[in-house]
Length: 505
Image (cartoon, rainbow, N blue to C red):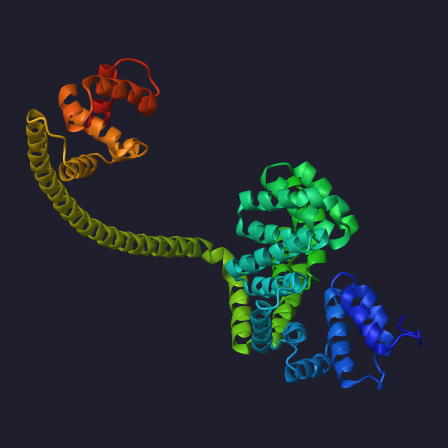
């Protein structure tokens, strides 16, 4: 496609951009023939630089020079193209990181992260957060590493990419393995298990290594060894070699373990190489092979000198000096060092316990004082409300007595109830029992008055006089209201008992 004369550069770049996230190897082959093409417009050249660099990085390779991606970044910045600028910042940061310009690299990546929050491109987010997770992993910042990896996992699941999902689950599981958190290691392995059948290559190999590590922690060494052997056939890894060496040590096969350590001394990870050298030197000394022990000690110093070239000079020199002194004096000072370490640990632990206890006590005292103050305020408010309610109840009771007295007097004189007394009876009754208002809301005013007078123990003859009815009509009304309000059957007395019970409740 890259050699076709019928396809314009713009079409070529458009196609490359569509597949760069999922087929980076193809994009490298697609764009390579156009590397020296001088006929590209400035815009096409900027996009070419970004896509080519991104494809290289996503393929697991790196570019030594940042001139190409730097030009792309400057173009997108000038033209306000935030989507492409965010990607350019990330890949510029990756190149700077491999150039050992750590501060500048992380600043560029963080700028990309800031812009990514407004773009909502999960495929880009997955790679961005994966890279930031890797950087923090290299720094030993495991809390931040896990945060970024979990963000990457969310992005991978958003685009429903099984390869990315399993790769990120592997990364998280590896961190928890390094932290010694077996349950979390198991959890993320189980998350990856349903997806791994369709996954090949490095990602599958890393999954098998993580699973083998968990099996070793549960004492299933034979199963772990089988998985590690399978992973080595797919894609050898430092962690796989290290676990195999541990198994050989358990089996008493020191020769095979040493072969693994020999291999790991060439690891690209300084920590892995240094640990392997230590183990080799220790076992060579145990076997009395002082010549090879001295040779590997020299090689270890060369590893330290490599660190010297890449990191702070004074710190690396001090590290090597300290290592040499420890190596020479390890046996004669072993007891002293162990005692000092125990004392220091106890002192630190005691200080932490005291500090934590005092802090917790202060917090509990503050919380208790706050709770006590809130309790006092609440109790005062409840007392005020209770007294106010009691006062209102006394006032309502007094008003009710006066109203009932007037109603009895009217009934004795043969007069019907006037509207003022009827309204006051209703208001006072409903104020004392809101449930009663809801029950009687479906009745007309006369039926409500019959109910309220019945509650106050008025005789049927009195109710008849006050409502301008006959006693028989009042009796019939009460029987009918028993069915209407309570769904029951019976006589007028049954209604009287039911409506009075509601008032009591």
